Image (cartoon, rainbow, N blue to C red; front, top):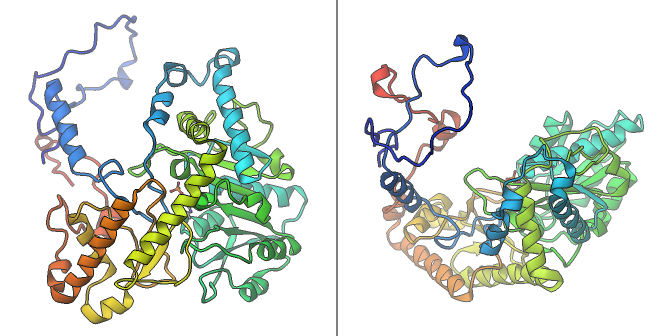
Length: 474
Ligand SMILES: *Cc1c(COP(=O)(O)O)cnc(C)c1O
């Protein structure tokens, strides 16, 4: 389809802005443009159709099943959007005087108290804009704690090999040496490997539980005790909290600080770049290191983002928490686990789970045998799902499983949808055996089939240059 710039017709416009009622200010010549910006000129109907057409070219959770493992792509109730759209929340200014935003302060305080209860933490900041940003904040808390005690010899953060890539990246960005420890054959932390890695130089451990293969580590109390024994702190990556919220608390598992991706677990749509928000919680002894926020009057030294972070995401999270209630939150977790186990067992017998035991909110299929037999890879299956109107699961992650497909159906899918999805997987299993060639070419009905992923990520084309300027589109 054409870009909106290419659809532009000089002089065509939609006249929706009234006359400017502000005084004009004479800016110095050297900051003025030589020419007006080349903005597209279109009628309102053309703009509407353009964006509606774009909408039809993407797959969102409102279009169909979206079992993208580790991302918790759940349906988010419209009430959360409605509340976040209230003018009292949406039209505030971050520099508004405190007395004018008492309602917003109450939202932050309430959300903080609920999320502290759910996580078993004592204090919390909402400043970080995403999970990775929250990890960065949390590990800085750990660093400041050690520094404040003059304990500067702790230079290493331990991360299991099943961890999300953001964990080692965070530790490295905070100046730590990353110590990768292999998982045990059951997919959980290898206690011997952990014991070997621990020492006087351990600053901490980063862990998610349930982990990225969807398994709850039953040695968790032992693990956190071992790290504490060595003088390190324990960081909980809460991206998988959807499996356990209201059921068990990271604080009770022995973790000292955690992040919760509000855009995964607590009702903000995500994918496509945000906005996200991350609650970083900690135990009381780390509270003094939390980022300072203008709105929350927190004492501290860090400032990881302006003001109170992505405030409207917190409004959505609080609406979700209050509409679900004390009973609804654990019920959502239980249903997320039930749905994952149901779908795993329905698919089993064709594509096989990497770990044949009860999973939590997600599970990983191992297609390496299937690939050996048929030549059809996890990528081919993922691409083929697109033709059925299903978003592909997470592929080739975690790295400890080869030819991995990681599915997380979430609690918001019905039994009918799960049965349909199992049927699609069964069909593809048969197709792979009878006509693998057709799967190598999939998808057959998408706008873009198989982009050059490396080139797309290394040299993305993010700007469009008008032809007449002589600089062709890159
Ligand atoms: C999504 C995810 C993250 C990173 O969170 P973002 O909000 O995407 O930055 C970290 N760890 C795990 C296990 C995740 O699933």
